[in-house]
Image (cartoon, rainbow, N blue to C red):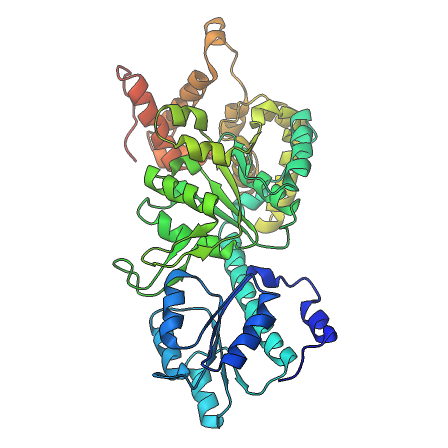
Length: 474
């Protein structure tokens, strides 16, 4: 075996590739080869373990996660190729490099057909095995990035909510993002639905040292409670009914980057406990698995509810709240930065007209004044929806302009709380939609689930309220 030169080491470690983010299991009954590979890789990779046979290897894999196996073909009891077939049948998705001193073309073809990532003959050079390992790690990284890109394309709507504007509130928020983004700390974003929490989370990610790694968003309110653990942590084949194959969770795809947990107040209490454990130990256990997987992920969480009040009500764990709220940022509602409305309308008009293939609409001073006078309970998302509908219809409809004109405030209404004003507006929109809550939610720029929760909360606090005229459970 050749000695490893300083030049080889420098070449293998050049560039932006992060060896420390990966784990390797070496399986070889030849002690010299096993020790050589272990010594070589421990200087680079985050975790390296070695086994002399498949029994030892299976014991290690039962409790630890490995991104890559370096597997000798000629092993006592069972060949490496036979074990490779078994691993693939049981859902192991990691890379496998097969090594052997005795092989012919048929063996090589059988190895690659069995799911091997590479096939190397002994004796090999140091740079030969290092380049093969690096290619495996880079392929795994590309698979993660492709998964993230597919999710981003499927959730493009949030990309349109840019941090547009020049108001003092937005300028102050930008300053905080520049400062907080560079820190590794967990961040909690608080703000109303549609105010742009995901945009702020993306900006924090772009300002961080993790900017070149994945940003993975998840709306906790959009996933059924019985599926959220599998969505985050992944599962092994056969873990539950319908788990026909092993599946990685979002923590896996966010490895080295940022995981954004929106509407985190919607997490069930049991899941809050599991998430807290992952944040504290930096390890997770896929559903149905006995092994722990190390994770390197920055968490940014967001909620449109007052999490301190949720803790007091027993709906959110206090220890998780403190763990998430290392840094707490509040996102201003659109009504708190009305001077940004002209910039936002122009931004959405330019962006959406190009996407829809229609000409932009003219913006009059009267229109902008009326839009600035509206309360915008759906915030920036509602404004974007209004611009998109107007482009599709070829103009801002009269009814829409009327809705954007603030009605004179009666003296008695000056004593109303913001919550009461919100309730009155939502009820008016629902009634205007003939009781169709799905349509009302769309017009308000919120989810149907959010609207249902509002009605449930009002029912709990004001059981004597009369039903809204014409409201049906659409």
